[in-house]
Length: 136
Image 1: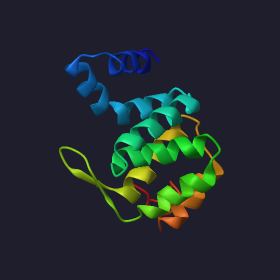
Image 2: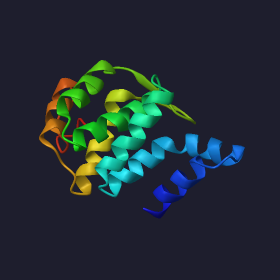
Image 3: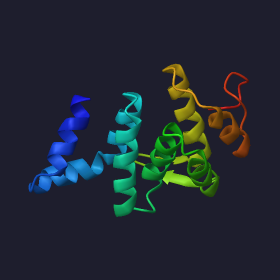
């Protein structure tokens, strides 16, 4: 929660470094808000970031998660489906969209965050439920 608050404060300052850092960390900010179970915050940050960088798949994946966790399943499902088979360009390597979704869902489940849509999305992406050895 402290990191979320710090990044919000820094992104509002006039300092160039702070703005660059806040922009760079936006994806992480959404994920941290999700992990803190602050789904309204996660969605607000994700929507704001999407408005600035609508084609950034790293933002889109967390935006889909935030939508799902905020009860906006139809919108989340549309995003998950729209990017099936895409590659998320992250450094130092790139990650397949489907693998990233499955991995994120596994992490969320470990933390007790689970929604029925997760199983539907895994099926939509042509993956299997965690535990059968096919989901990364």
